[in-house]
Image (cartoon, rainbow, N blue to C red; front, side, top):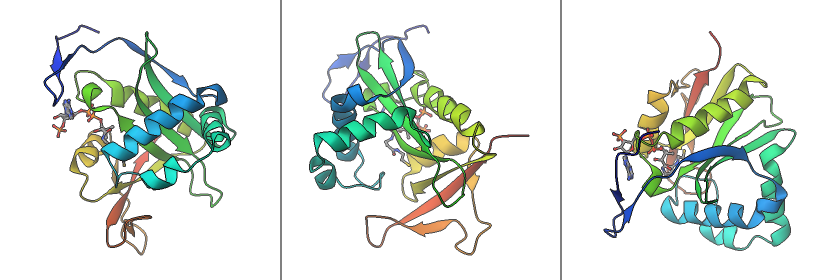
Length: 190
Ligand SMILES: CC(C)(COP(=O)(O)OP(=O)(O)OC[C@H]1O[C@@H](n2cnc3c(N)ncnc32)[C@H](O)[C@@H]1OP(=O)(O)O)[C@@H](O)C(=O)NCCC(=O)NCCS
């Protein structure tokens, strides 16, 4: 990937995007899984079905279990990792027992690695879609209705509102009372 030059963080500190590769997480990654999760919840408190306070209260064993979800029987967690071992972002997939097929969850790219030039988010999404195709024809997700940046990202990558059910694809936020999320779906075949 050609490097278009230094980016600037809000602090004015310039950062240069580095090459990265994708991999799934394991139990041994638990500390970095924890650190990235806490960053996500601080950056975007309403984007995930967990509060920062709840995450801060998790034990080492629970973080180890979350690390294992990278390669679980019904879960995947993919991270974008630089050659120096820095994690730039993550996306996960899981298969709920209710038979609704694969869901995309835990979607996050650290602010300095966002933007179409870097391709972090699209590559993570493609990796989860490859996993999802083994488990179903449709990939589902929920996104806060006011999260326009994420909604644009999903729409650009083929997700549409799932307005077929009685709720017309609008569901109550799991942790924020009075807030609403949209259920989006993407057909993975033909
Ligand atoms: C959702 C998310 C993963 C998408 O990744 P992304 O890199 O922003 O998406 P793209 O690769 O499509 O980049 C395009 C967008 O990045 C914006 N962008 C470019 N550089 C950026 C930067 N340094 N910081 C923030 N946004 C930037 C562009 O303006 C463009 O936005 P636009 O569509 O409004 O024009 C990312 O925005 C994110 O982690 N958001 C916070 C967590 C979140 O909301 N998760 C979704 C939960 S459902």
